[in-house]
Amino acid sequence: MKNIFRVILCSVLAFMAMSCENENPPQKANQLATPDVGINVQENTIIAAWEAIDFAAYYDVQLDTAAPTRTDELSVIFQDLVYGKEYTITVTAIAADQQNYQNSEPSVSKVTIGERKVPAYREWYPTNGSAASAISNNGRYVVGAYDRNAFMLDLNTDIISEHSDLELYDVADNGIAVGSSHKNVMDGVPAIYIDGKVVEIDLSGITEDLAMGAFTSITPDGEYAVGWVWDFASTYYTQLCGDYFPICYNLITESLTVPEIPDVLYSSYLAGIAPKALAPDRSILGYETSLDMFSIIWNSENQPYEYVHLNYDDEYNPTEAIGDSQNLFSPSGRYVYGKGKIYDSEGIPTERPVAYDRQSKQAMWMYGGSVTAMADNGIAFINDAPYYIGTTSYIVDTTSGDLETQTPIVDWLAIEYGMSLGSYIPDGIIVIGTDEEFTTILGITNTMSGWLTCVIKLDGEAMSAK
Image (cartoon, rainbow, N blue to C red; front, side, top):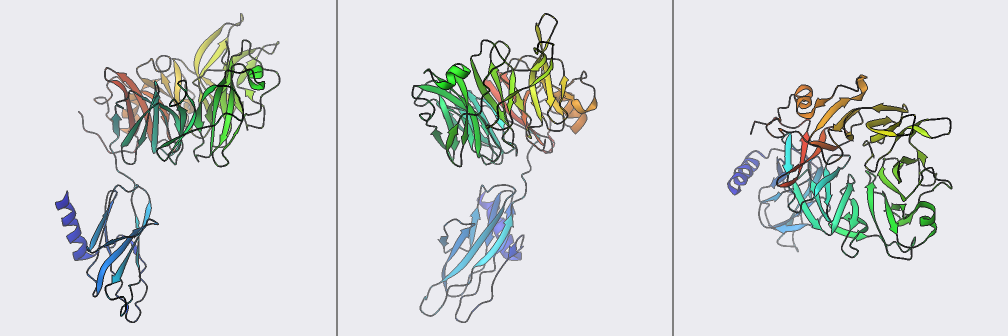
């Protein structure tokens, strides 16, 4: 590797190939010459090099707003940078004779790291056994959770970090994740994972007794989270909702609130109310935990929730309703997807995969286990069995008007994107999420070695067969 860098460095010094914008001011009297910096970019590595400046003792080098570092070398290497980001490199020659010479004016170079070129398929086996649970809207971060273990994966660098006594259920575009911490309370309390640290949320403002809970979702901007608290005391909320109730948390103001709850609840045998997902506009998708598991939506935390009921009988009992503890929003919040129920004349429900378009207010009923992921362009991924039990996803394009034709994911990738991934996922995968632009698909599968987490880049580089 060092030999490669030497070759690149020689090339930079010989040709001073400027893949950047230099902003070098004019030189003053008795001032050292401004370094003429050459830049070479190799993936997410920047190599900056310059020729020696007369009467300079060393050079101050700065990357963006980081503290300058001093070197007597004529080059510097910055590695593991962020793809798709612009950096500013500043180099200043420092005079050896400070009494008779002035330091040079800084040489300022702006360098853009391009988007990373990655294979179409990548996979990871977290050693702590955790399974992926969500992907950020911008497609950069993946988090996972299983049996009080968690992981965070940065797809820009392929670096995965694993954590015990923690579960992570959702992640924002800036890498802030939410879930539950089990460090001090075995059953877990709502927690934020930020900058590699776990912050447990103080629940004393809403309950005086021992409580447990979790954050289940966070907005893409990383400013707002929702979850639930299981309260062991008899409080206003438990008397109204059952044993557990919803919570909202503003990360900017660090304020914890309970969203508006109707005076009269629809469900019988209610055990509690739990938010599950957040749309970017902070509308909340949740469910009533009862015999019916009805899905509910808060348009804001200050408005009572509404049921995602589609049709009613004469007694206002739903004949078609969306409801399951795993139902979610598509990345933009346009679709509610997962499972719903169609009731017969005796009031007995049949569960079906469903996607509900909040714009057109139309429900699209499909066949199989459940819709485990939904893209904003109307592509639905249907598991062939109940969540986490099946083996692969089948794809339905809900915009085509044909809700019965289901294509196995391996075949769909070959037909739509020319990808031959059959040797990598011969039995398919369960798709559990996509990014907002629909360029990245997050999948899982249960293997003899444990949970496998994988990512498919629809615009990634072609793969050769295993």
